Image 1: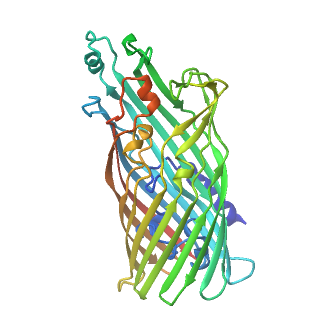
Image 2: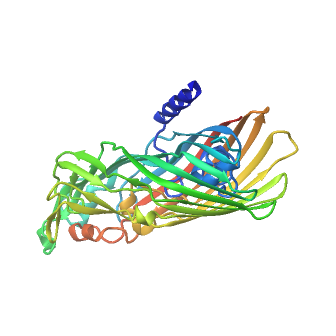
Image 3: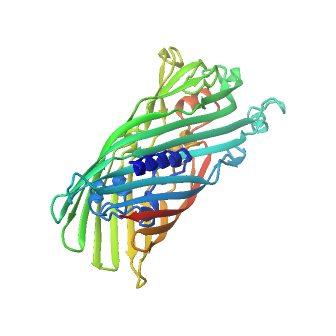
Length: 467
């Protein structure tokens, strides 16, 4: 009983230290823990530790009695750049350069049976965040020139932005070895999510009369300031199956349902949500309906010899169902439309589904207790050039990842693993991305010309205990 209390206390202490991370398939980590990451996330048919409760619950019946603790140092580099000739502004790199990502899991036989296992843990699986300094979006001098106005007539248009999305799961899991070839498993997902968004573009020139542009413009701020972090609990389920076709070929499949959350609620002041999709600047409570997408994966692992394992996965992430158009509501009359005042609008993030392709290789050299791993993970970004303007603070654009790792058994029970991941730098320049309503109300045209960038490095260590 005392061991259970220690485990629970340690779990909550660890997760209280977790910060916002910049994750990589959209904003989902390619793998949980050092072993999964060093395989490039190709673990649906190749379970290695208690983190398999997230990737394929059936694997919990195949990894023996164990506990695993992993911590990852995640180091993203992200920037937003308005130096294109059409804007002539500045650029900024944003936010902390180091985040800690912990995960903790365990598994053991259950109900007095050798073929039934129970386990689970707490796992950080996703996150996204930037913290951009204020920078010039477009100089006032450029507006003076464009409108042939006296020098100093227009103020600089400036941009600042902040985002922080955190997501982790508890996953109590039951798995069963049905026979020598087939294993099945199910995990109940109990989720935690926190969302914070702040985006301000100050001194945007708005037409005084859009139908008579000769009437001139007035500079006003565009605010979407949801700066007080929210906290929601959610739920879902994950199912998994594994089947040994031969002694050296194993198939795996898993499905995770949409993770359902209550609405994020933001209490904002007067003007905090203003001139955004017709926002009138009312104070009050605003709500965002943001769930986490369903996903499915299939995998195959090949073990042509005792010292070599090759694993391949294909995964589908249904971002379009949760992150394409997000419902956003406020007090009565919070938004003005052509049909009159309303309390509802849409956040048009434009995220598309992802297909993830992962490859991992494990080699056991002639050194007792040592295993070496390498992996590759690719997924086309869920946003493209037409979505840049609406994702200046959500730059989830990296696609190519390479990973390396090793683990070493420190005797009969203890093991330690290390991993390194590099997500190659990606840039995305806005084209045909300025919303129509913004084009109608301001002098800005179809292409923003803004550039978002992201690259990532991470190192991780994992401790394991085999009972």
